[in-house]
Image 1 (cartoon, rainbow, N blue to C red):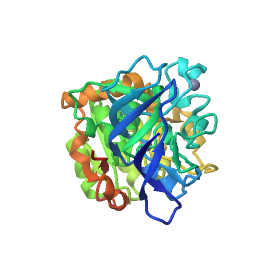
Image 2: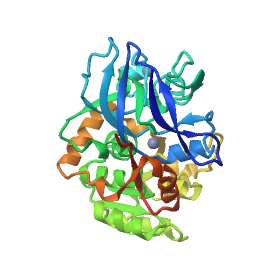
Image 3: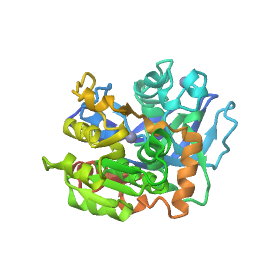
Image 4: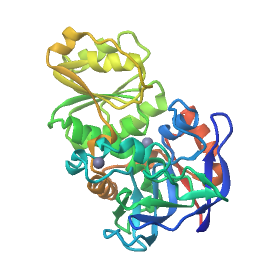
Length: 367
Ligand SMILES: [Zn+2]
Ligand SMILES: [Zn+2]
């Protein structure tokens, strides 16, 4: 047992509260990681505010990066001192895991969304009371975490570790949705709805794929400017009833691909209606369970489709080091939309993310 500091989400109203907790030693298949930094993702806020109804109280955070401090006997791919980016947990033995698609693991929910290990225990406690400390395999709003070995991805020690956490969720989701799920050929056109972290990462994925038209739709002008600086060729505000017509005109008949990152029903419709034939829309924005949406099936019937994509259809163990290398080469300049905060500034960071002022807040956990 060791004492660590963590930010706990108690309920939808109270701010995050920093406090001291006890953390167990890693089990055979686990790793103790000193968290250096953690990005804040919209999913953390959605769980805190119970738009996504997971059990609280819980330590949230799922874009952690850190240093391996201690290893269980069964973890063979890491050493003490390794720099790691944390990702979601998966079983490693189901059909999807064997196919390199762990975000569709049969055990995804129990391993990532309960805040506990599969056996119902948590490595974290307050006195004799267990505290949920296994959110998305990591609960990274903490100075330390005990994580499953499979959720820790080794990265080159020369990379700027405090910047790398968002590679584990937001960047993997955006770049992977384009490069793994849609796979546009060079010269394709793509429309991207939403210019938050995921949408901007999708822009970078489209640039890397050689798309010749990259059109970004977002209501905030500063985000549209950011999209242009990332390689978007055109930007549009969404509050225009002629949006679909404008997209059809810009693309001379329709976009080959679209990515919907906002979860707004009108955007889903536009993302499908702006498609060429054939054309594919990737649905990435989170919508509450039970959300229904009408689609013009005559339009879809002409070779168009919509597919949901989780974590960019990526295998994080190979995709995260690839993204880190791209960043080191200057091909993934997401540091331009990052703002760092001290761990104690977590509530301000969340307020700035919700207001749209900051695209990707990252918390520095300190010594
Ligand atoms: Zn996330
Ligand atoms: Zn699995």
